[in-house]
Image (cartoon, rainbow, N blue to C red):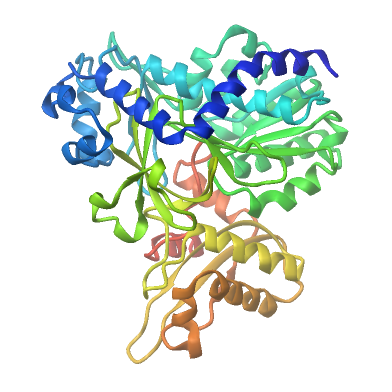
Length: 500
């Protein structure tokens, strides 16, 4: 057994006991998390407004404090960012994670307190590596360097009290020295604003190093790995980094990209571990190699609520982790040690296990197609596309979809814009499998497609290689946490892409 994973495994033993405790006692652990947050923030302006001192239960908290999103909470965030103290959290908030999101050019500034850094953002990666060392005690991944491809917003001073930058920049600024020693690329390179320039610098800095793991969003890491091969003239990544063993990914669904990674890194020893983290916190970790769901981390200074997506306008239907059900699509609401109170983050999840609590990400509250009552979500789309690829030998680089609305006397359908790395051997078969799998997965879609009552067969539009990349570049959304919008209820994105 290698030395480093042995040490990590020993250090992780006490943490394993804590994880076992919250897995075995989710209701009590979550109740305690909430009450601790309320007690700590009782004398803030927000706490006084909603009389936190009079809250002694989850039910009273839910009755008293409204659910909010970024726009409705913006006033509080902005005041804290301008240096006003004790607004939403009692300790000074010195960092604000800058995010442009996926549907708007407007920048968002999410508070990141020292407590949320300690208890969530930095704890998550440590737990992930501890779980990995426990799952794979013979691993040699810790004998080399790990490479991250984060965003490009440097830490910028807002005033004497606060700074802003994207989450990766804030993490770099707060990463312990011992972890920084193993990380690539150099800090200056990691924060280069121009994505193309950054990729070139990463190529120069890393090709001679013993890189054993990479981390980040699948789509942008594919760009990086392909550029590494172009830069070196090698056939696959193992010819550059023979000890490559781990990809820690998150931010978007991995399945549409899996086959491309398997071609670029052709070894059965490669492990792919998913985590669910965002500017608002670190939420879940894949902790079993044979499962593709993730353990919800219930002791990270975060209290969770879940609102069924068929009741998005009825916040009274929000439930705590103790009352969730399997197979229901939920919008995620969080209360955190960064002063986010009943904050709807925009993601949707489904529980795959209740003992312990495990989830899979199903999409976004604003990213779906429901133009005809079909309610297609991202999880449906990715499963159907995976089936279509398997059945026709296709490999997808990027995709998005939107409705084609009914003309007078006509019927609607869905248009899928797909950029293939490897085209299907039979395009009609690809569309048929996609269509049938969506019907299998989604009864509402099946009903609309029955005898083409409301919806006609989907239309497929193939886009030339590089179209999505050029489109994201034109929008100033290359790299980092920027994501291609997968599904939309309007034709804004598909029309732009078709004219790109």
